Image (cartoon, rainbow over all chains, first blue to last red; front, side, top):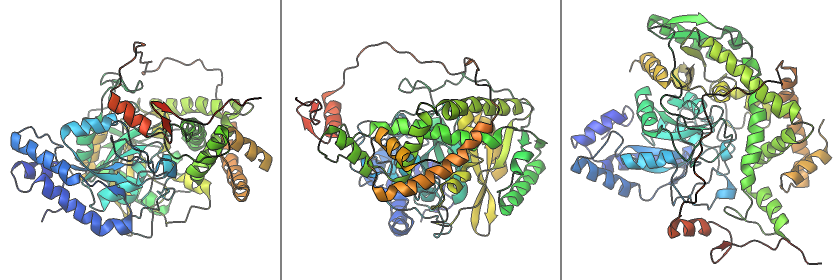
Length: 470
Length: 97
């Protein structure tokens, strides 16, 4: 029996290296868990029939001595990341039968390492949501309490890791979509610096916010995956090099900044604030200096985020025309084909955001909304850069509440949007941010979020490992 | 307040067919969302800023074609709902008088 509950990449690698078990046996152990739990949890939209075949290839590499740290490591992959030849639907009806025609750059890097892809995971359609309830293929349940959401939009990936249905996973983060589900499911989730990981082969939601990020049980594993998938890529002109940013530290040991005024704005659950204060105390005991900082414009981050999100989403989703790929519904002429294909193929939230994006980009409103939001985005970024003159990490809770009940926020879109209050700033500013488990409220996991300077994931890994006692 | 007519206009621009039953709910939702994001109008921002060069620069490449393998061309064409030979087939766009 492999102890999946405490298994890490490093442990699995060492065990496979000495032949304690094979990659095939490890993959089979996860497939067994999936067949037991997935019918209820619905983390996977598809389990790949050739997972064992992939594992056999990995075993060959252990035999011929070419195995790397990720060889034979089982991954769950979010349904908006392309793997050549496999269905990639973004949990949408419009791509139900679409097969990816190439590998995402992150995927081809993992393939080179000999990682095993177990299957593709559920998400909010086109990464629009915060609970995985907006999937066209049913909600994913939180493994810690199946009456609650796993968070979103990478809810399937987080639930797969938390439910021992995969060792690790890839998600994507547009406004908190890796970090918020990681917090709700009690695992680690990283949103890298914008440009660190190539977006080639990641279906675009909000191109200026999107990043692929790892989900794992430990910080050390998130770091291993991050190191494997990062890097400049000719196929993504926004990728950065190791030297694009040269983060300067404030002190030898990281100094932590807490935006007190931002935290006391109201609407944050008491349990979250209590857990946050305990986490601050824990970090102080570990020798970190904690300072109060100000982020005067952070309270505006949510409306700014959503305006830009609507605008970019409506532009990005215009490629689905029912002609070149994806669902086609035939009407009386070509124009009606567009209307019918898009009208039936997109779910409610996607349609809503397309209309909102069309509105904020239409002449007469463009200056009032879109241009204004971009100007405000700059001011918020300046707030953060200024704060980083005196601190190395900015600490907040990851979410304003623990995992909520399935259906609780469905009738009120604004209350769902408010879930992202602490996470969107990292996407607006391009800064790296990571959620780490910080305890429980009853049996529901909570997370704290660490944000660092551009290009300074290293500081997040160091502090995260110390916080979790790794 | 956004009107039903404006919703129809937006759906028309975005090429999305909406059911009549859906339009009313959308009007209500979009109203509440716009009321929320309207906070942006209170933000003091400098709209005349000149963009400053950031850390990330345009990535240029030579304007050359890269030969695609017949297999990948075939894979791409096979994803089209309808094809004729090596073309994606769509309905006739220009009408005859």
